[in-house]
Amino acid sequence: MKIKLSPFAEQDFDIAIKWYNKKQDKLGYELANEVSEIFERIKINPLQFPREYRNMRKAVIKRFPYNIFSDYNGFC
Image (cartoon, rainbow, N blue to C red; front, side, top):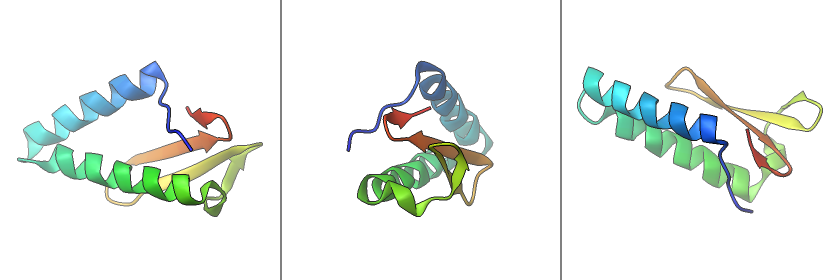
């Protein structure tokens, strides 16, 4: 399975990493690592996450106030 982010999601993710790195050294990279771990879990079994709306599934990032929404065609 290939992971694809929307342009808005890519921009938001980059901004979040920079913002967290300004708040605390390497904290943004910790966010990036947690997101990467979620992506790997989605690749292995996308159906492990609860359905949020129709075919949309929601993965919660525990340490940061973000969620990842996925569908069968990629990411939103």
